[in-house]
Image (cartoon, rainbow, N blue to C red; front, side):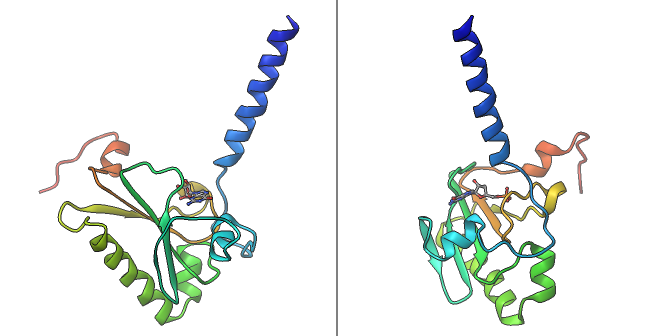
Length: 155
Ligand code: 5GP
C-alpha cells in the first residue's frame, strides 16, 4: 500500500513538472531577461547554432517535431511578433526575414518546402517569451490541415 502511494506521489510530481515545462506565456509585458533564449543568446545555455549574424541567431530546437526544426530569433529583446513589429528597427526586421530565407535554403528546404511558424501569447501556445520562428521541414508539415475540422478544397 505504501509503495503504491509513493508511486502515485512520484507520478504527480513528474506530471506537474511536464505540465509546467509547456506552460504558455503572454506575448505582451516586460521582457524577461532570464528566459531560455536570452540565456542561449548570452552563452549561459548551450545550443546547436546553425546561423548567426549581428541581428539574428538560429539554432536547433531541443525537442524537434520534424527532421528539420530550427528556431530563428532576433538578438534584440522582444517577447513576440507584435512586440517586435512595433519596436524593432527596420534593419532588425529586414535581417530577420532575410535570415529565414537564407537558412531555409541552406538547410535544403527550398525545393520541397517548409513551414515557418510563430506562436504568440497564450492562445498561440507560446512557451518561451522571446520572439522565435519555428522553421519546420524535411517531411510534410501540413499543420493547418491537421487542425482544421472541416476540410475545405481551395481552387
Ligand atoms: P513555443 O512553444 O514558444 O512556440 O516554442 C518554444 C520552443 O523552444 C519549443 O519548441 C521547445 O522545444 C524549444 N525549447 C525550449 N527550451 C529549449 C532549450 O533550452 N533549447 C532549445 N534549443 N530549444 C528549447
